[in-house]
Image 1 (cartoon, rainbow, N blue to C red):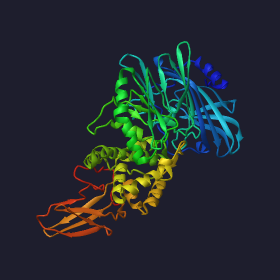
Image 2: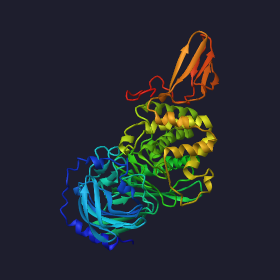
Image 3: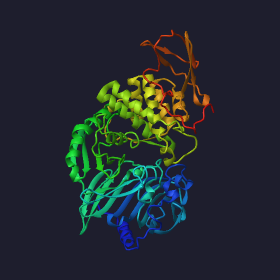
Image 4: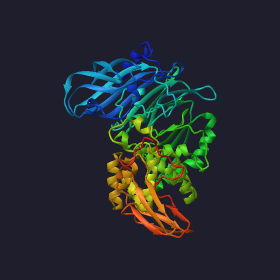
Length: 563
C-alpha cells in the first residue's frame, strides 16, 4: 500500500478541523478563476511543472472538499515567490515550500507563496497547499466547469468534475495552463464515504478502508494536462475486459458503470467500442496509453476526454449513424488532445477539429462514401463563420471554445486536404504528426507525448505530402468568413472566380460536373471560363471537397470580408 508523505497527512488533518464555510457563494464563479489558458503570467512562465500530488477528502453530503495539493517544479529563472491558481472561495491553511512553512497571500484567483529568499534557475521546488471549502457547482457541465453533485436512480451519491474550459483551479491549487503538463504525472489520493468508488487517470495502486470511508490511490507516470485530473465518484461496478492493440500489446479495459447499467456497459464494449478502437488505430496508429489502461467512467454529465478515464454520460444511446457518437468523440481525444496537446489556447482546433473529423471517417468505415458525405453535411450545417479558428492574439480557452468553428471548420479543412493529397499521403502525414514517423505498428510503450502549435502542424503536413499547402490552412483557419465562388452565366458560357476573405491567394482546383462528366479547373489565376449549352446540367464542386459557402450555410455578421 502506498501512503501519503507525513507532511501531507499532518497538513490535511489540521485543515479538516477548520471551519469549512466558503468565502463566496458556490454558484458565483470568480471572473479570474473562470478563465483558463491565454497569456501565461511572467511568474508562472518562470517554472516548469514536473509532478502533482492531490490528497483530497470529498464529502458529497455537504458538497465539500478538503485536502492538500502538492506541486513539484523546476525553476526556469530565479524566483522569490511561487504563483499558483486557486479559486479564492477556498480557505487556505498551511502552505510550504521545500518543506518549510511559508506565508501565502491571495491576489484575485492567484495564490502567491512567499519563499523568503530568491531561488536560482534549475532549482527544484516542492510546494504544498492545505485548503478546504465548497467548490463551484457547474451550471451546465461539461460546457461550464465545476463539480456535479448528483444522485443515481437508487439515491446513491454520484459526483464528477469537468473543468476543461475553466481550469483545474476550480478545485485544487495548480498552474492553470494547458501548455504546461505535469511531465512526470500525478498521484491522486481520494477519500470518499464507504460504498463509493473513485475512478481516475492512470493505474489504481491501492484501496485503503477506514471506519466510514474508503481511500483510492491512483497514479500516472505519464505527462498529463491539468484538466485530465478529474474526479469520477459513484457506486460503480467495474467491468474489466481487454483489447489487443495494433502493436500487439494487450491493453486492459476498465468501465466504471452504475450497477443498474452493467449489462448496457458490457454490450457497449463488446458491440461498439472495441470496433471504434480498432478503426481509430487503423488510421491513427496504436492507442497512446496502452501501458496504463483504456478507461471509461459513467458520469452525470455528458462527457469529457479525461486521459485514460473518459467521462461518459450518453446513456448508452446509438444514433442513426450506427454507433455511440459520444464515446467515439471522447476516446478519439486520447490521440488528439491527450497525446498531442496544443501549445496555445488558440490552437484548440488541433484537439477538436481533428477529433470531429474522425467521426465522418468512422461513418465511412461503417457505411461507405454515402455515410461519409452525410456526416459531412451535418458538420457543414454547424459552421458559423463568425471568428477565425486560429485568431490573432492570445485568447483564453473559454473564448476559443465558444466558437463552434474550432470543431467544424477545422474538421472540414481536413476533409479538403484529404481530397487534395489522397488517402495514402493524408494518413501518412497525420501519423507522422502524432508519432514522428509513419511506421507506427512497431511503436511500443511508453509513447512520447507531443506539444504542438498550428504552424508546426502545417510544417509537418507540408513536408510529408511534398507540397506547400499553407494557403489552404490560412484561408480556413485564419479568416472568419467563408470562401465564396462568384458565378456569371449566359447561354454560352460560365465564368467562375474565387472570392476569398482577406484577399488571400487560393489556387484551389475546382471540379465542375457537366451532364455527369467532371471537368477539373485549375483556378490558379483565381478564375476560369467554360463554354456551356443552355440545357446543360451543371454542378459546382459536386463532391463537396471545398468549404464553399452554399445555400443554407451561415455567414456571421461579425465576419468581415476583403480585409
